[in-house]
Length: 78
Length: 393
Image (tube, rainbow over all chains, first blue to last red; front, side):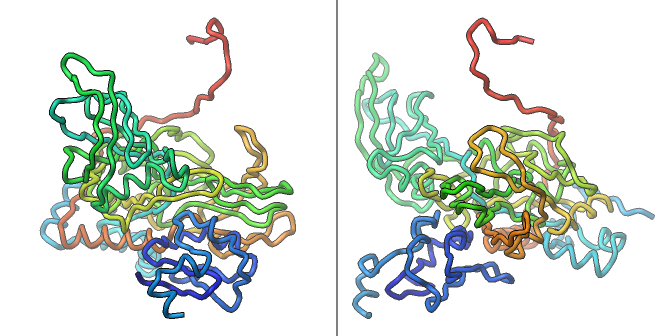
């Protein structure tokens, strides 16, 4: 499984993400945003406050919330 | 002399590999560079696309007959009810239907996409049993290859414009337009704007019954006007509706579709829906057609509607164009408000490019509509009346 980014706060499953932008509506920290040229989703881990509002706001269920959701191979590498 | 082209002439060019095909975003700069006359002569087809949540979607399935046979009256697919009020082994699975065990987290849209992906689906069906269909129960597994027909039939897709959503109340709203934060903290909108099919042909001059389309990665057709279809609405000077207007009913072979272009969607505390990718090729018949196709986001307007009003008619707080919405920030009542799309522009762009490739490489030709849709000036409403109060006029 490929991932756009991950750390302990959230990670995004690239295969599921359709780049709609729904998650950006709830991200007060502006850690999630759509690039204005490509309209692809960008996740800035430094800005992420870990509020997890994006997890349930994502219609594609592409955003996972915590370390326990990580595939075992990824979790083992942390 | 003014350039005029027919569907037949354009199809000949597609077949002999000389057609010039561009996307609805690319045509904007071409018209600016060449001017309308030269661009009309140069470009033959413009591809348009959208990838948005479209709740009014679903699939007809025919499971084939078991032995002994069953006339299915209740059908579950991965624990999601399908409508079986049809012939013995036909069913319709609606995208927004929810499962008994996972509620909105797994619904009809998930079943449809799992079928497209080639996964096994658990089929459970029951029946009272008849002389000709004696079996009363079946519990088995199907795939898209094990069943007979499987085709998407979506009664209302491809909205021609749609109101943007805002929330003036003090509480968070969970809607089919996504999460709306309290006190006008965000505006959500859902169209691909200048790339969107029906915004590029505002009077549906080239789109009607029989139009060949890209539907979720497979060739499909416009089958009928979509439900809640209305044409006589407020329009801008360029003819583009400034509110919800035309819609399309579309049909296509589910077995040929790709999950790259169709995905289930779950809207928190609202329900299940489905992102559907649709592309429509539009012929450049003449200069007027190209003028429509060169429409830009800055010239397409929509209303910002307050979803905190739980009534059929929701108040508009103002009009805004798609360039403003795409900028990421809109000023409303003196307040800077962030904007969010629900329609994936990157996916829509991929569809427009893929449709372009179909035409250029696979010789995907255009179909002139067998019938254009009639004008509709009014949508009926549902009123609570007694049996004797129905107006037959």
